[in-house]
Every structure is written in structure tokens, then in C-alpha cells.
Amino acid sequence: MAGILRAGGLTVAVAVLWLGGCSRGPLQLSTVQLGSALNSDKSIATHVSRFKPDQTVYVAALTAGPGSGEVAARWTFGGRIISEEKKSVSYTQDAATEFHIAYAGGFPTGEYKVEVLIDGTSAASRDFRIEP
Image (tube, rainbow, N blue to C red):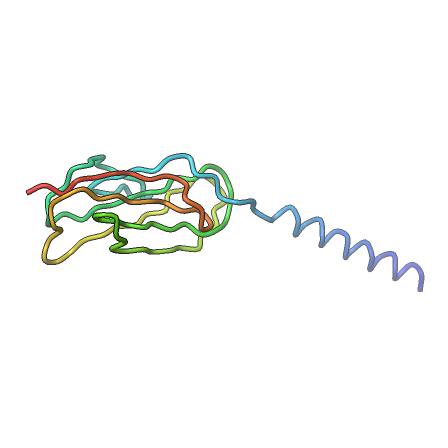
């Protein structure tokens, strides 16, 4: 019976070690990209900070290495939040998390900001402008 318990204990120990090795730490933001088009990996293909009222505005939060957590984009105009989206992600390597905003009737002209949050904490922001 003692041999069975040791074997069972070994099995439990191996399972605990295996599960511990699979855990991912928090996301590590490397940069935030802003632009008007995406690459297939969800990074920004066309980097711009000035947009026309009818364009879609994209932001990509690039993270380094493995990690998991919540990435959010908070879009503001005139100091007021106009949109916010959150995504729960888990990555095994460098990755890009994409968000975008568009208005069918066109954006009002002026100064805008997008703030990227990681697990609810502000990590970076980018200013952009909508021009006629």
C-alpha cells in the first residue's frame, strides 16, 4: 500500500510541476501602434495619426513574450469617452491585440485619444486628429 501512495504522490507532484510550467505571467506591453490598415498578424500596416472623418481608426497593442490578461482600448474625444472595448487574451509569444473605431456618419473633426489599458491599468496612449 505504501508503494501505491508514493506512486500516487509522485503523479500528483508531476501534475503540479507540469501545470506550474504552463502558467503565463502578466502581459508585457512593448508598444502601441496607430493607423489606417492592419497586417494579417493584427499589427498596423499603415501608420498615421491624421484621419478623414469616414476612415476607420485602428490601434494595436503589441505585447512581448507569453502572457495573459485583459487588454482594453478607451477612445476619447473632447475629454469624454466615446467607446471602450476589452479583450481577454492569452499568448504564447509576441502578439498584437487590435481594436478599431468607425462612425457611419463620419467622425467630427478635432483631437482624439486612444488609451490602452492592461488589466485595468493605463499602459500607453496615442493622440490622433480627424481632419476634413
